Length: 366
Image (cartoon, rainbow, N blue to C red; front, side, top):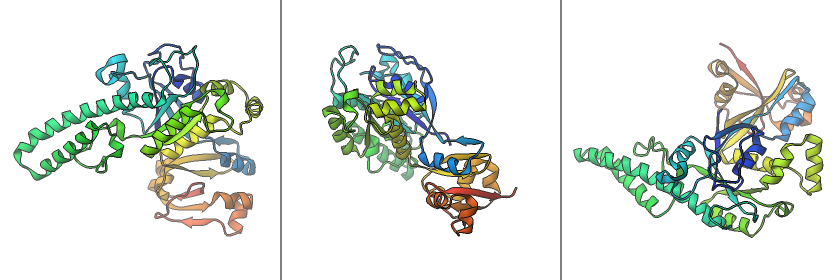
């Protein structure tokens, strides 16, 4: 399944450096605004130690992780919603993503220009949020005007839609995001195809200096971001984009040694990717055989036939059952056959809800 995370933020906060570390895609990085105009796209593997454990037991010919798509969207500035700094084009790219990764600069460096003249993470968040709100308000006002004309007919359904749209507009005019609106339902006829930018979930990513990494708590700027995010019910994570860019250039052994020298157990990118994956409401199931051990992505609550369809559409069409082993049971048994003999393999039908970590063998007939 294709899921996109859009990386946004002010110019020169480390977005493109972070993207390069994520994907090694060679996104251009320069110390001036609007370097990134067309969005860069990278397909990034989701780190999962369980995949490595399964591969160690099964010893397949191939090991394939699941992935997330990241889109590096150019830095926004004040007035982006009015078209300043290529703003309209940039905002349209945000409309296509499932999760917004908001990168905030939380480090001091006189050699890297800040577009607003100094470090103030809450102010920076407010600038981006305001531009998204202005764009949402513009979109909403156009819909409300069209609906108001239609409501002259007196039809109750249209009058109800107008009332819903007016309520949302008043909410946005108070500077509040769509995601905090109690009556927001993207499937409601009044709201369908509005594509509200501030309805999207946000993960705040604090870009810190190397000195703020080891204890994992960041600095006073990170604390401000966490307090802001908590009010919105959003998550916060920290990375040092500069360090991550250096790590990305190393081989596996070099990465381990470099992380150890910084007293870090794992890459900040690994934590960040995992947080984004979780924020999207995703889980992983596995298939494990001599040809390939592979991780697959589905949303929480997905039924077995639909999970089978992620592997191949024929699997969903001809679904019979899913022979399923919980991950821990597979590892304890040591193999699929041993888990079967121990009674740990279950035969699950169409109504089964896939669990995170399930190792599945799909039976089908078409």
